[in-house]
Length: 294
Image (tube, rainbow, N blue to C red; front, side):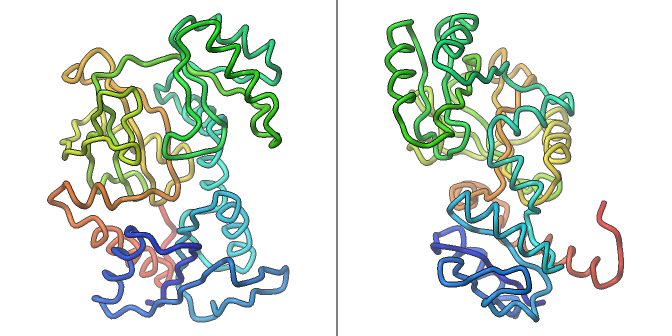
């Protein structure tokens, strides 16, 4: 098959994927979105022979537009524009999970500092304030007091971008020092790991220690339902254990659409990029055979 890879920077995740594709003899069209234009009647990128395109754009805004243009051109892209739009926005993410009856942290959105303060006070302390768009745990704040809330809200109110005027506030979930990242393809788990830290943020990007995690039936069910809720695809589903690390109860706090998997691949027995390429091959085979995706 001929696979297009949309990117703006080749990270270790993309190198793993590219190496696997090359090892299997697949043709690759690397599409640096910084160097191309995307018009209503076509693009300067060489995409005519692409069977499928994989969106690996580091920039959220580029990802959102590129996926829409490729769908406009009639070329399958993973993930879809719908999935990208939902996953890129934490408020839309939360709404999609809630609409699918997936347990997710209690969330409120406010549009002024006064209203945001009221929401924070309704949760009590601590609670969490997040940017509505963002990744790697950046600009997230655990708010422990009214004075801290006032200072953070004042700071956000003077930032220029309109997204900082959308105050996304969640309850603080007292997780057992770790959360769970699951990489899944159309709701089928590829592998899972815990990310542990003494800090309340346990992201691998923040230095969290990673270890392989065996999913139970309930976690698998939630991964499938959460994936379906955002439109499916190659996703990172993030869960937190509630009631202790052996309770078997979870809350899903986020689904990621341009998921990184280098940390996962390094700590599990599963060949993560190999399994992802298996999935891509199956999608192209189904397309060629006229099989409708499930």
